[in-house]
Length: 482
Image (cartoon, rainbow, N blue to C red; front, side):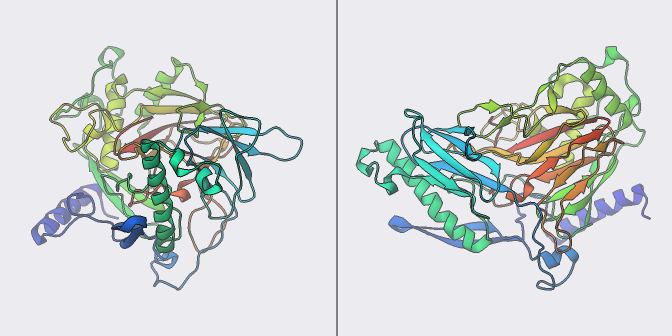
């Protein structure tokens, strides 16, 4: 087995060798392009022609380091999928799930004119939409079809209103959505999936993703944010404003090595899921749990629509949560910085930036949310869901780019994190990740072409015995907007 010091030397040598040859490393966003991005021709009405780099999922055989065509994907036992509802009208819609006869419709979301909302759903599920100004009747009814993710309310197509009824700005938004739907048809021919973003508003992510070429593939990264091995006295731990610095803080309470080598192991190639053992130290977990004792945990909520509302849904999510700011302490700041190194990002991406920092970003606000501290008691769960939601029609369509889960305890029965739709050729059941103290899971919410990854759907299984604690970190692209 290669010892850590040799790993450091190997990583440095590989980097120097690549520079000498003039080659491009995957984490150099100035030159790297994911090899599975394929150029497709886009032809829209009114002679709007363009090209687009679409992500085409590799053949499943390559996930086993075999030649393409030697294996076929198994159909997952879990049949859920994403459902996006597009409102192409000048009035606000309310969308409801129809649970069956003699049962009240279940409110899902409110959709602003020419915007969209979404939910996790299943083939056969039925939904209806009502105009907010008249909730007495349905203006649209949909039945979910397998692998069809887009459901549209277009009153012009139905003949209930005319194009001439639209104002100039409304016509522009209507045309945008029509073009995006036409693009999605061409995108689906090339990739096999619907386009969930709005073309051409959503760019490719600003930063590359770790490759996930085959199961068990291993990557290494090096960070200066070494583990805390003991907790500093309370008087040395204090709130502060995170900013650029040259040396890790409170080094006397950390491991003596100047660098920490960490390993990512590929658990899934589609979606891209990575496991990082011992990301957090026991002292760091103790600090987080100590912070938790002074916090009030609130009932967790979910969000589906474009109007900014969140809703509590005990049938979907039953955990309790609170939030931990990066500037809460130097230990929390170190976790953010280590997470930035894990994602191969400048740590400034995860905090408020000064004017001269990362000038290519349009906003100076942090691209990361606060750490979410989550607690699951017996029976509590989070059913299969996506971490991304449908953005409004703003420039760049900001969305969650990556999710990191940090496990704070182990030994409970149940409480696993699962990816029920992972692409493989052997096992139709869900990919299961068992919580272990200090372990982290990284997965990407966006594909390399900027389209949300429907396969990133995941769940937290009910806790059957004991309790479960974790924190998660969501990073956004190209900017944070919630």
